Length: 116
Length: 112
Image (cartoon, rainbow over all chains, first blue to last red; front, side, top):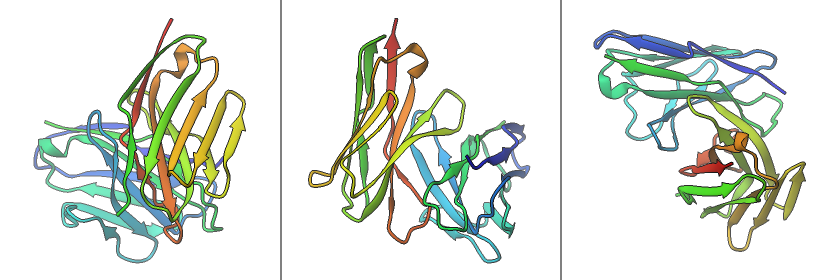
């Protein structure tokens, strides 16, 4: 099946610094990628929809200036957590679907962010 | 808005069958999915069913969909300890692409 690679798998950063998470579709092109956040013992909540070549669409309550999303190509979307705080510590997962309209969404392996 | 609900916890003995249930509210769901998440890991797609289907079977997994009641279930036959994980059901809506709405997840514990 299709592969979505997410990097890094885990990261620890200091408060106030920024962290970039990459999501790559390795063997298909994705016009749209999705970023989800998962708090401990909770479900995944959609943060934003990343559209290639245009601005991301953020869900209500998600600060777009804090969670910067860039989708510069059909195979790469990045999520940058700016000025990270301990409450940003979470598990972030991206997903992508192929441009051919295949409904299946392929997920990255997730990034565990810990802000200290 | 859409809402997907699951029971939080299920415990079974090894070799028994497990049935994980999910309810959803949006009748415009097109596909319904079951994902497995092991500790600290991403999501693994187990199976999915199109909304005009009633049942789908894949080896030990059987998915039943009651569209009238908006009820989805996942049955795991001969449950093994390696099946212990959190299982999420999710739905996608027509024209929403690959965007999914997830249930809260059911933690399956398999006792030897």
